[in-house]
Length: 393
Image 1 (cartoon, rainbow, N blue to C red):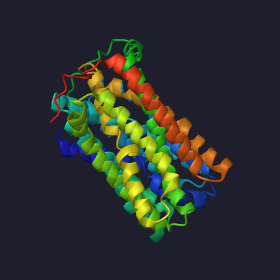
Image 2 (cartoon, rainbow, N blue to C red; image 1 turned 30 degrees about the vertical axis):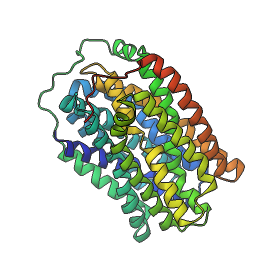
Image 3 (cartoon, rainbow, N blue to C red; image 1 turned 90 degrees about the horizontal axis):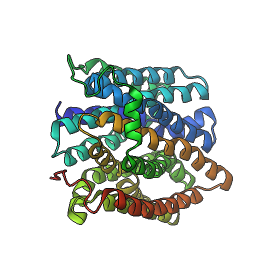
Image 4 (cartoon, rainbow, N blue to C red; image 1 turned 60 degrees about the vertical axis):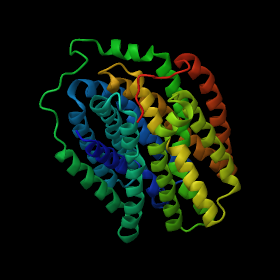
């Protein structure tokens, strides 16, 4: 499978999964929700991903990534169709849970494909592949609000269904695939092997905080700008600027790792977390004018959303050959807790305080503390030269 094909599958998967972000304003108005209820929709999508992630890793390692992607798009199309027919808030939450179930298979499958096709020259392809995540959100941010404004919210969900269903039909599964995990082997033994890997657990727990921050941005950034009297379309366009910053970051961070730290993942990941924390702390002080908001959007994208390319590279390098799927899946299960638990908490903070400012400040302080903890614990676990076998182009 060519890199372009892998990237397109990553793009269109996130087109569906991240649709809650550009549609948050319209969902809030249509279903008369408060901020905490909006955050619960994000949690539903990540709860779906968390439920399926570990299982999807086993599916990838046994059936093959192409068959897994075909299944995932079929599930996402089902969730999108339910969203189209949703007449209540709880039906919509269930729809995003199903979309999350499908999307939870995409990243383990694409990670496995990259490692099979490009190792040890996998770092740059992994970053390019992960740039498909914000590109998918850009597509959603451009297309879906326009569909809602010209037609209705239901038609935006109909577009999601059509796109995911067509891709699911077009993806061809492997005719034969030599799985690395035997059919007669116990699933629990493999799960136990992953859970005993302290490096993976530490990276995953720390990344859960980054995931919380990222989903707070996706869910509340447009609403935050609306509270500062930006028009909806202006706020949506600024969200696109944020996503452009994310694409830049996901492509550039792997080379930054090599140039600044000689490929040392721990130092680079800690730097991203510190910069993300600082961006959150500065956000309440700025974003009053269009220029300020544009600069902040680009900075947030480059930090708070761009960390994912480094994360998937680290996890894929930790995993033994042929087990990238299950390692990625279980790690994603852990980091999903950050989104599931953190996003409603973020909304609750806004509802209680009456402002978004305290939410950003709490996130900023949390991430700076987490970065220090990871720099200490990660260096002890991984040593001075993390993953020297990776060749970074």
